[in-house]
Amino acid sequence: MSTPDHEPDETAHTPGPNPSAPQPPSDDTTHIPIIDADTEEMSASDVSAVENLPAGSAMLLVQRGPDSGARFLLDSDVVTVGRHPDSDIFLDDISVSRRHATFTRSTVGYAIADLGSLNGSYVNRDRIDSEVTLTGGDEVQIGKYRLIYFAGALKGQA
Image (cartoon, rainbow, N blue to C red):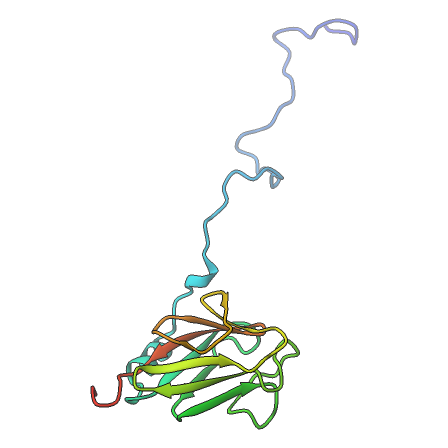
């Protein structure tokens, strides 16, 4: 028999973890999954909308921010964007200026220009100072909104 001031007998059973018993969650992190939030897949309806864009038009898909998943059709020569209710694309968030930016149609697609907004406009995470022509898949950031640009066929190619 063992006493508190002696080593336990080798034959004595010491309580230990039971491998078959449920274990409490560990505070140790053993695996961190790699997730790229910028490569979220599009829904089937979004893919269909892109594939069926009219010639000479384009679409902006809200990837992040308020109204995520919303789609905006660019189908006129000048499309205004801002927090002002009269904007063609109304983005109702304090991070967006009242008259934030414009999209202008050209023979090669659409270009974006910032209108001196407080928070600026970004294309592929670079702040723009002048008009920038967009290509399919470009990320446009206006305030908290991150939008992906999809171009339809150019007029005359459809």
